[in-house]
Length: 214
Ligand code: FES
Image 1 (cartoon, rainbow, N blue to C red):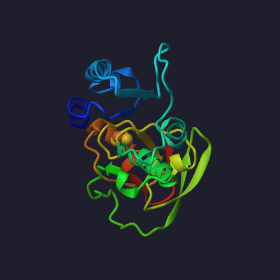
Image 2 (tube, rainbow, N blue to C red):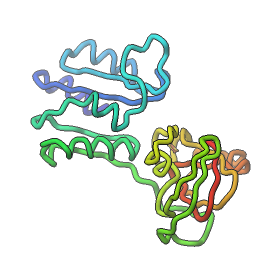
Image 3 (tube, protein in one colour):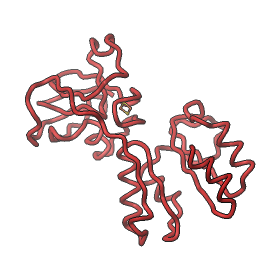
Image 4 (cartoon, rainbow, N blue to C red):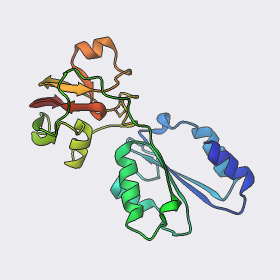
């Protein structure tokens, strides 16, 4: 947001396109300020990509993933790209840009990585493969104990909700029906949720055969 504010006041001849992925209108931080800045500065374009849009939303719908990025992102070797958000979205954007002749030093990323795991099991990750069953989807995946449930589900095309991807928001919460996992930081889960075997798919990794409910 501070980059956008500075851009609007100091770079009137440049152009900035913001592609902002959110769940719905209510979850857009700085929504009013962004609208006001875009209204006042014709060189700022703001595109809201909503996964649960209201009926009157005319912008792009869905998650900001490889498909939507491919349709939306202008590819320009002169441009600079600043990427920040959930890991899978960042990976998709980086892969897309790297498949075009965009100079590496034009791709800027800001990643927030999880703190070290606080395991519910003392066994360290070994790369062992475990089955993870997504009970409502009737899908069973083979997942390494180095991989999060979210990474595995998204890679297999399962439409899993998520937002921060670092254990901070609770959007990826799933219920552990059976099995053993490790879960890194889970500060956004209440004790009640933990007692009910809820876990955060973005920071949970299997330690044996696991069954979950989305
Ligand atoms: S996506 Fe935010 S806690 Fe998992």
